[in-house]
Length: 71
Image 1 (cartoon, rainbow, N blue to C red):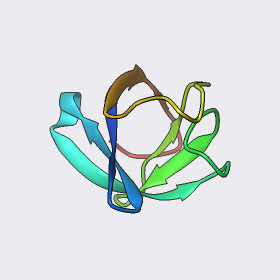
Image 2 (image 1 turned 45 degrees about the horizontal axis):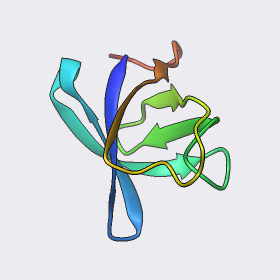
Image 3 (image 1 turned 135 degrees about the vertical axis):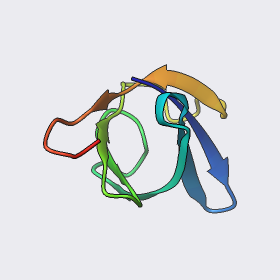
């Protein structure tokens, strides 16, 4: 699923165009945002692609929405 990630102040925000949804990232499996699972404020989780930590933001990437979450 295509998502756009941006940094706002000291947190990350994710936008899901397919659902017209913009939510704050509340948990990250890894210290950075890349290569692990993130959870957003509505409860959805995404597997993020491996990218360098210094990847410029905002950026649109393919992230996999984990199946145990509701649409």
